[in-house]
Length: 124
Image (cartoon, rainbow, N blue to C red; front, side):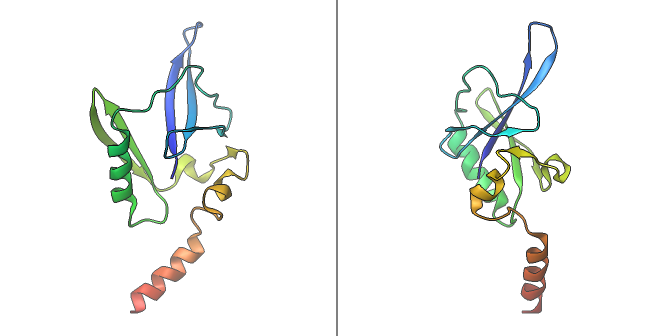
């Protein structure tokens, strides 16, 4: 599992830039980037409800081989935003390029294996 943090930073020129930062499950910053999105220049504090969001994400994702669980932490309340099965429309280009394989030692979702596994389970 990993955490992606999106921040829309209003720069001096009054334009917003989407900043993306990635963290591991202990909220240690990872030096990964997605496309041309910069990291946020300021320190990002761990959400107060971080452990609760982790627990919720484990419960919500337990039946899926891969799903992104999106949350908002607003004034101490956790809101579930969405479950996303194909982030970035399937064109996720993280850098370094091998990061997806590093996380699990394999691709996060191998659709051929999922179809085969599903057929075997349904025969029982």
